[in-house]
Image (cartoon, rainbow, N blue to C red; front, side):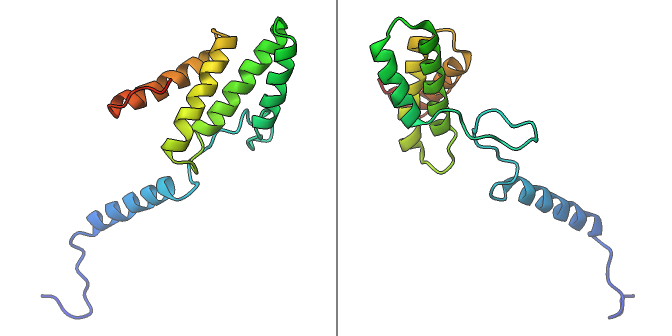
Length: 141
């Protein structure tokens, strides 16, 4: 017989499972929890570093390359800068897809134009192209 001072233990195990599941979901889905935006290589202390290149630096490098188009080292640097700017756009969670994938794809293509062996640029380019294909939309040129 149940009395007012006695609490039923039926379903207590299920409640613990639900509480545990909610705690896990909160940890994973909470803003910023478990999500790492692209910011270049991590520093020795474990904190993420800012990317080495941004759009202004890329523009300056492109101007240098226009003056010295045969400079192989500069070509590789511009390719890497193009990739980093594109990756910064692609992995920016604050930008909607309409504003990040098309410009990122342009940067990845430029990186591959200068360095056809740039593995990360090729992989991210393919990812964006696959996204457009899955949506049934034409891949931007």
